Length: 160
Length: 150
Image 1: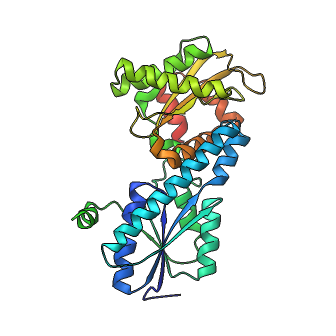
Image 2: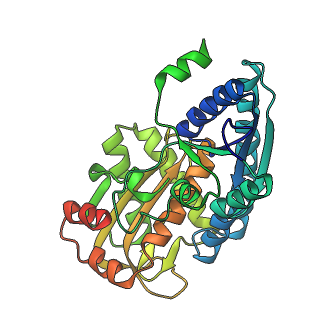
Image 3: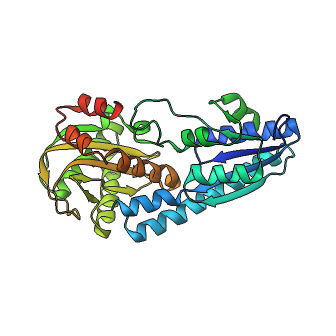
């Protein structure tokens, strides 16, 4: 574990900011000749909570779980394609569970050097401060974390 | 995605005026359609999606809260309307309590992750009895916004 980075992990959730993070991760991996792993976590904990709270019925939970699985596959494929444009082969990992918990476990098991994340939400409410999964990942990561801000330039570079 | 990511003063209505379940849902969809400039066909499509979901089982979750929701590609991103009723409305909640606090959540089918996160965020936010009481007592949309931001 250390610098230069040899094992970089980028977390995807389908948001624009996580795609920006993926692009940074690709560039960093190329620069450092590091291994890059893109990870999408299907948030089955949230689905279970929604059923428990009575917001989802069982049939709905199953439908959303399929949607989330499809989302995961789509975004992981997309990032692999982006990486290929930089002649980088990446590993794609799809996990299930509580996001910050399974991410922490993965980072520890792999002894990763760096976690790359998209935007951290502004602190707009004490009540919500600790509930953002991205925030929780940043706080609980066993390795250094790079938080990537919105950046149009990197999108332009990958779209070129 | 958390509740504050989509909370919008134009998408808050206090008080709601309808007195039954279908009326409340219709009123919430109207708020969204008006604020976003949707056509009457789009309004009908959104309403139908929410009522179809409601037919699977009530979205009244108890403690005076209901979260009618649906997937619809009328909306391009996850959208939420918050409504507070002065009077409790029968929403077929499992605890038998009528509802006064309503969250309408609509999302395109391509935004499953954000949709799930938002619903979970609403559920977490409303776990406090004290907070629910304060929301029920909110006099106007400014007060609703302030309560969520505290």
